[in-house]
Length: 154
DNA sequence: GCCAACGTTGGC
DNA sequence: GCCAACGTTGGC
Image 1: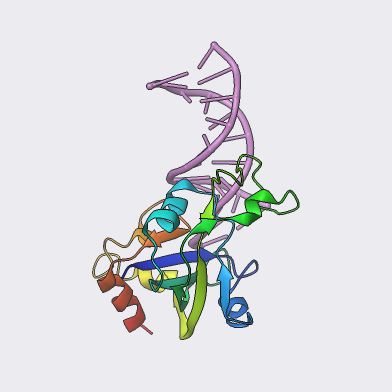
Image 2: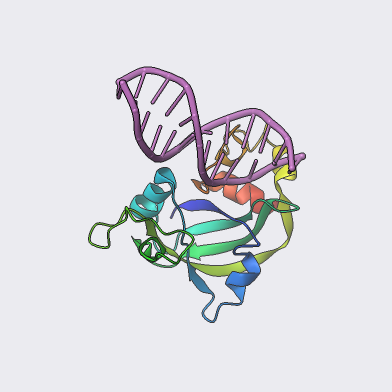
């Protein structure tokens, strides 16, 4: 079992959007960063747990929990010229970008804000990738003890 | 809207 | 392979 944190801008796709999908699942499409792609393609397993993080919004932070719900497969949005994430360099016969489906778990009772997580940067969350200076990854691994600690703040 | 930090691109 | 220019991310 692996643990992850996955960022999304809530005005693009939010925890409530995931919760209101008919089967509460959604392809996590549009990732165009090789490190993030590699994690989805090579490391994610069905059943892995992930924190849903809202970025680029009024109160950035962890807002919910979800599970990895599929094996990795080609990110189809890269093949669609009409799509905002179209990438002509991704060939359906040799896809450049991959994704996994995620499934809604639950919404946290409150937002665990980035500012709150920072309070523990010198302590229990010292090595959390999210808090590393200049970090821009949209998908990152979370150690189990950090995962549990963050949920413990709820 | 600003801007720091980082990733990607492409000329050489 | 270097590196300047450019684009993107994302907090504030």
